[in-house]
Amino acid sequence: MNNFDEFWSLYPRKVDKKAARKRWKQMGADNGLFPEIIEGLRRQLPYMMTVEWKYRKHPAVWLNGECWTNEVEPVKLTVRELIEANEEKDRLFELQRKKK
Image 1: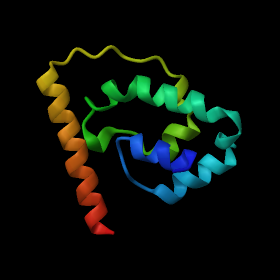
Image 2 (image 1 turned 60 degrees about the vertical axis):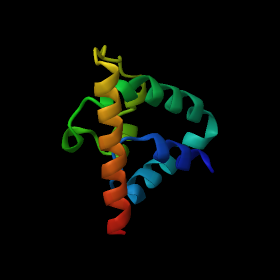
Image 3 (image 1 turned 90 degrees about the horizontal axis):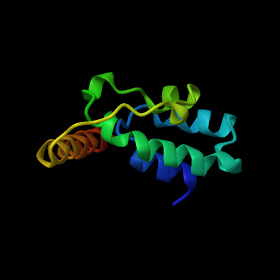
Image 4 (image 1 turned 45 degrees about the vertical axis):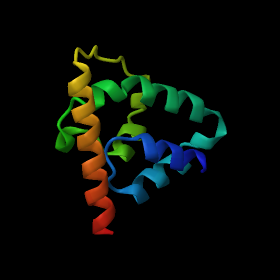
């Protein structure tokens, strides 16, 4: 798995992969930024999973805005709510995959 594929596998909204990959290459993310991007994404995932799917930023927009540097909003969810959010992500990802 290459760096972009790892980013893509973690990002909670799977839309416009071509634009995200293009932005990834334009910004030279494989040349030193990758650890910072992934660490920022992992830090933000709990909050991102609380945002309704249609309001989550597209991955290319997130990369373009250097959003991995954003402050992380605290999340106060129960374990059940986190599980439900993760199940929603998996369900939506599966729907996207079937459309292709």
